[in-house]
Structures are given as structure tokens and as C-alpha cells.
Amino acid sequence: MTATSTGLALVVLAGLTAYAVLGGADFGAGLWDLTRNPRQRELLAKAMGPVWEANHVWLIFVVITLFSGFPGAFAALSRALVAPVSLALLGIVLRGAAFAFRQYGAPDGGLPVRGTVLWGRVFAISSLLTPFAFGAAAGAMATGALRADGSAGLWAPYLAPLPLVAGVLAVACCGFTAAVFLARDAQRIGDEALVTGMRHRALGAGLIAGALALAALPLLPPSLAEDLRVVGLPAVAVSATAGVAALLLLWRRRYAAARVATAAAPAGLLAGWALALHPWVLPGEVSLADSAAGPVTAGPILGVLLAGLAIVIPCYALMLHLLRSAP
Image (cartoon, rainbow, N blue to C red; front, side, top):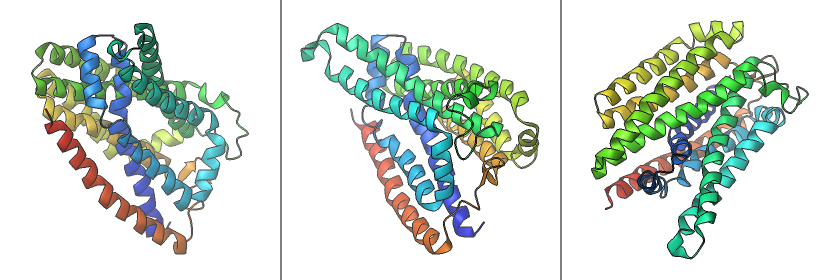
């Protein structure tokens, strides 16, 4: 694979990582929205309201890079992942609509309370549906059961143990990330009751996520497990170390540092998954090198994407800074 194609692959991985951490924190908020705690919902809305749409920019970067930089892989994944991607997109659409309708449909807005409760449930369920679908897709890709022509079936590859565990693991990771981030937000506004509540939820979700990650290891195909122990070991070590560090920092109530460790845990997990799959997109079916665009096309695409990231990342960081510093 050429250096340009490698650069495009790294853009895909970076986009997936940003979406898993930043978008995952928003999706995980749906898990805690089920508690129906009014003050917690207010904290959630304040934290999510300004950024939940912006976080999808990372998914857009991933789709554009795959479509233009790896057209063969994009075509194969579009056929093989119809079911989970459709569920994920349904969750994204329903989640955004439900969040908006619930916020603007509060009782003082003239809509009945029953309607806002219904939209709240739609928001929570759809927030969990999307990470579960993406996790199941990643698990199915790892099993080697998917076929480039979609002949493996619409649902069968995702009913195996590994995709199901991976889906639940994705939900747990999102819930853990969201709870850690919300604990820090609650600390910033000085609400100790909310800080304690989110801290307990974060510790519980983190332990569950760690247990699910360990449970997934014996379910890996032998070839993938071997690659994970060899090329993917540094990334897995980073993920495990960061996860343990995040739990210890939470225990010691160091929430700002815990956010950094929490972000590193899914980043390491994704990197390990990508390294173990390399050089395949679908093991035994589609390789990354064979599906890449030609050098004449790949070079300009990489240049445009890097220029776009150079603009988007500072703007995103500035947006977060301004919103976090606002009263």
C-alpha cells in the first residue's frame, strides 16, 4: 500500500476514534437519561445541546475518506453492513429529532408532558441503538463471516456471540465515557450530588466495560487473536492501562484527568482492532491495498482532507472552549 493510501487509512482511523470518544459521550448520555433525574437531565442537555450535531462531522470525514480513498472497501462494506448501518442511521435520526422535540416540547412550551416523556424514551433508546449497531458491525468484521457481496445474510453474521458482545461493549464504553464527562461538568458547576451520582455510574459502567472486553477475547478467531497479541498488543496495552487509570482517577475524584484517560481507552481499543484486521477490510475477502484509489486520485483527496481537518479541529476546539466558559 502506498504512503498516500496509508495516510488515508490513518484519517479513517482518526475519524473513527474522534467519533467513538466525542460522539460516544453523547450517545452514552442516553443510557443515563433513562434514570429520569430532572437535574441530571438538565446537566445532560446543557452538555449535549451545543455539540451533539457537531460531533457527526467526524463520521462524515470517515464516510468521505472511505468513499473517495477506498472505493472498493466502501462498496463491499455498503453491501456487507446493510443491517447494522441502517440501524445506526435510524438511531442517529431518531435521537436528534427526539432530543430537539423533548427540549422544545417542555410544559412551558405549550406541549403536554406526556409527549415530552415519550420523546425522552425515544431519545434514550435510539442513543443506545446506534453504538450497539456500530459495535456489532465491528465484531462481525472481526469474525470473518461477512462477504463482500452481502451473501452472508442480512442478520445472521450479527447474531454470533462476538458481534453481540461487541455491541454491548460499545454501549458500555459510551455510557462510561458519558458518565466521566458529565461528572466533570457537574463538578464545574459545583453540584456535589450530581458529581457523586455520575461518579458511581462511571465506576459501574467502567467495570462492566472492562469485563465485557475480557469476555470478548476468547470469542476472537484464532488468527485475529494472534495478530492482536503481536501487532495490536501496544494499542491493547494502552487501552487497558488507560481504562484502569480512569477508574483509579475517578476513585480519587480527579475528574479532569479521568476524562483524558477515559478518551484514551476506546482510542486504544479501536487502534488494536484496526491493527489486528490489517491488511484486510473484510478478512479473506477485501484487502485495504486492493480497494484503494489510484495515486493520481488519492494524493489530492488526502490533501483536501488534511486541509479540512486543519480548519475543523481548531474551530471545534474553539467552540468547546467558548461554550464551556459561557455561564
